[in-house]
Length: 602
Image (cartoon, rainbow, N blue to C red):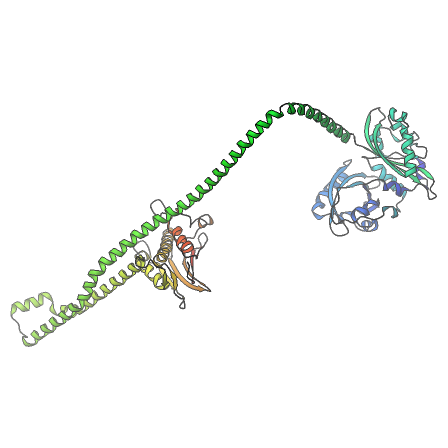
């Protein structure tokens, strides 16, 4: 540095106010030693506040590790310069993104930083009058800070326009070393054409008059090459207002200039091509008008056709869904209708002879009692019958017959009563005579359905009997519904539960497993819930989410149609406006709940 720079008359505050960047020096104790006034305007903290704590305390915690890694590369690894980005906390608690360039002075254990603000973000206060702030740092440290800036040529001129200071950035950008350039006129940086137009003198005059001038033009390097530069020149004056010299900041913006020129050239070429094409288009305009009209008509026809096709596709999709549901419903309805007719027919055919037998058993009982009295009368008056009669009495074991006959008749009577109860359950389950909407005792309907499926609930040589637990709400009111359809829904759910319990029993062959089905009824405000709870294998989510889809089944081919639960859904949800819920997890059992509204549905 030239000794002239150390003159106490030079106001270095104005020099640092020229840069839009934040300049700083960090000491070995991790505290800021010197800061340019721009820090306070960007972050809102005063310089004293920023210096009072280690600089890493201001860094966003998500950026701390990355920042320390860069500083380690600079101080420990020995890199000449590091560049990184991070966020620093503003006074109001929010954060602002900054771009850092740092150099390390190993001899003095100081880090010199040039920091750029990466744009306005909410939450940072701006100092209303930067020029009124105090700057109390020693001038020698400011010189070191300026000298560490390598991306900007920062130098000072005396009042005659001669160079009196030169930083490392100026040496890198312009090519001259300090001892070569200090004392030279600043006109050396201008092209010969600019010198002929007296541009060096004009810009200094403007800076001295207005205090500051910023312009862009071609600048010359030591090797004779040129670059496009952005130059800021500010006048420096003493307390009495006397001109001391000029502070200059120069940036090489050649790349930007070339991009602008390339963009302008491309624009010019494009404008030329547009002119040429315009002439061609005007020549073809008449023909194109006709073609455009035809295309518009064609496009309108295509648009209408596309709308029709889209509408048809939507209708076909809806029709397909309805057809699939209808198909499933028809198949199940036909099956259940046939089954209902068969059950009703069989029940009717059985009921007639059973009724005949049951009715005649009473008369047969009276006849037998009469005959037994007659036999006892004969035995009383003829205690010694002839040998042939005695042989026949012994042959038929008359005493046992007399004792067993009433028991036999009573057993036959119970059997016919049992057959009549089964027939009544079959007739009630088939619902052929109950197609109308009516109030139904759900407990009676559930018991009838369980009685019809009783043969599947019983055990055999391979399976245990399924334990059925009835948890019926004693205060449950009658529910208005279609009885036959509701019975079908109950039967579908119970049949699926039985299949699941038998599957789980086969999987746990040899283990102590008791299959169990709980049938539960509850009144919940304005609806009734019927729950079927089994301790079977449960279902994964992939199966549970599809169990109400038509034709979906996990059973082997020939074992299931996939219509049971989908039909149940149609009966409960669509027909009765109720709800059908399923709760199940793999190996955790299953709960199927049917909810029917108490109020009459339309």
